[in-house]
Amino acid sequence: MSDRTNVPVGVRISTDIEHRPDRPTPYRARVRWFDPASKRRQSLSEGKSSEEEAQEWLESVIEAAQAGLSPSLATIKLAEYGEANMDLALRGLELKTLDPYLSGWRVRVVPTLGHLAVRMITNGALDRTVQNWIADEHSRSTVKNTIAVLVRVMEQAVRDGIIKVNPARVTGWQKLYKQAEDELLDPRALALPDWETLVALADALVTASHDQYRGWGDVVVFAACTAARIGEVSGCRVGDIDTNQWIWTVRRQTTPAPGGLTDKGTKGKRARKVPIIEEIRPLVAQRILSADPDPDARLFTGPRGGRISTAVLRDATHWDDVVTKLGYEHLRRHDLRHTGLTWFADAGVPVHVLRRIAGHGSLITTQRYLHPDVHKITAAGAALSAHLNVLRAPRSLPSPIVKTR
Image (cartoon, rainbow, N blue to C red):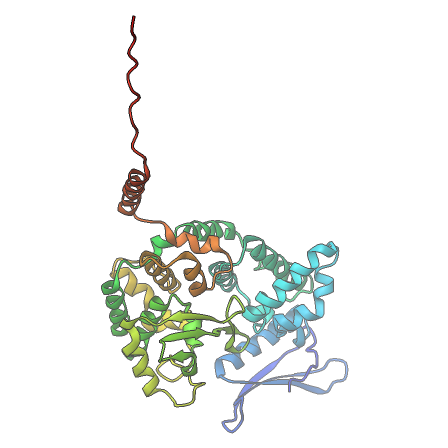
């Protein structure tokens, strides 16, 4: 446990790192100094998982001492700091604003950033986090309220002297959100064109991975053919697959959380059923055979049995480099879902069924995948004309009027 003794400002500090291999946190970082008031030697220490973490902790304590901060504030985590100072950070807000702010903090900020020390949160980390919120299809107002509460908490940290500049004052996110909205208006434009292209992408990603792990390709093909999110593919268990009817019941997703990845319910909070098409049934059957017989065993894992996320897939397969070489530099992991929904729509799946497969809350979202090609529009016009010709009743000419004298 950390000693909460404050390091006096301006004293000479000595540091050391002790390696204790038999401990859960084997690197013990320690600072020592002579207290100018008591004339006694004091120390402060904390265990860390790596030597790099231990060195970072030492530097933070030294910097805090130079600034007159207590070590508890120098290393405090964002979730802990926000909980302790939320009333102060949100002072002056109208009551109707408090609920959306607190919801944004609890549901989005804490799961993604709460485990980081306040002093370790950077502009880059916040930029990526905001982009992820936008990619998760949260509404503009939801993202705005989430950023606003984070700005207020970090501004309080500036006033407390923990940080010098508020990194949460993110600029340009509205432009990113506009780009995301434009893409969602035409998600078909983000889809892969055909099955051969999907297989070529999967093979290229496997080849580019460090261990050439075939599972990466299986994840990509399965995600596209089921129109699922990568987190949902990661959350798929053997017991979720009905091999009699070849249906996958989507019950959970893997998402980032403090301390790593965790499983939670689907985005819509409801389970949904997705068909497993013939093209991927051998793939699924093989993975079921090679998996642990426990129905709770994961159908898809990394090469070491770990959970998969979109970031894990990207880094392990060098995704950005691969899709650029293939001529699909715009392609993201989430676009595999756009691909599947576009293919389902083009196959003639009724919109109400497609909505259930996608798990969309709004029918408007599903309808965006139904934009027909030009030849389908002209064919529809010809079909309507033919239909009207059949229904049109023959029109008889009026008899001529003969005048007599």
